[in-house]
Amino acid sequence: MTDDGTSLEDMLAALDPARRAAIEAEADRLHAEYLKQQALRKAKKRAKTPSVRQGQGSGSPLNHSA
Image (cartoon, rainbow, N blue to C red):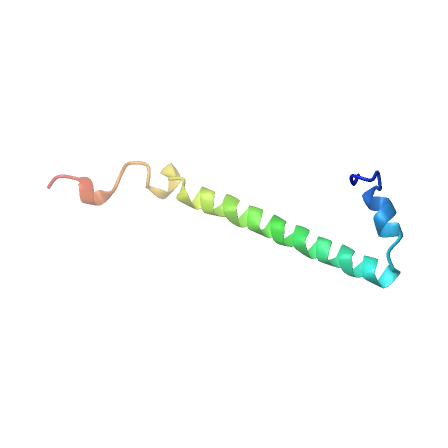
């Protein structure tokens, strides 16, 4: 609700149908972008986590004494 008691649904209902469609399309685009960024952050976090299966769990081979 806004300060004057108007709900979002009321505001959207009062809009021209073409304007409302444009606003809803932009909202959908922004939501898809948000989900994409969230997935990228999650993938980046997983990529930074060392994995024992990949042989990264025992340290770098450069640290071993000869």
